[in-house]
Length: 257
Ligand code: PAF
Image (cartoon, helix red, strand yellow):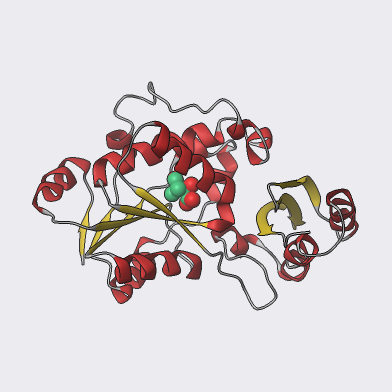
């Protein structure tokens, strides 16, 4: 496995690589959910590229960005074990050499669900993903279904801009009690961790969206939304853990009928 820390160097490397390339963009703090994306890419593609870039443009709160876990050594160790070929760890000034002057804006769905609660979040996500896809030029890029709204927006952006890449959605990896794996789960204290699994349990229940929100509130969640769209139920809700607020998101596909 080779690690490249500069965009300029990566662009030289990319000229020498064959195809097909599978790409897994991340912000680091890798967990079993990321591992499943990397495993799938390693199985399906000749070359697997992982990027680790903590993207400030997609954080609506500076404190959320500051506390985001960073542990490159562990991430690299995991990537090596999984058979990743290349890891790119670019720095901010190279990725945003335009000073974030150019941005990808979506005018509809990005303002709903999480977008209605996190100003500018999806503009930050779409902009960095477009930059990374242009740098890596993969045949396939893998995204977790936990961030289903993100997956749909990225898929539609690639279609709108005629990018020759297949955007592959991958099943959410869960803890035994159903909690979706996320880098943010490590902010949960013990009581928070116990309550967190309720999110998935209630999303899967037969209750309607309003009642799911009410039940979540009863167990201590501050609910941003519980919304069903196209037979998929989406939710975002926060738990207070000590002085911290931990925001969790999840979604489930609902059975027909
Ligand atoms: O899902 C994430 O970790 C991020 O939103 C992504 C796609 C790596 C863009 O920064």
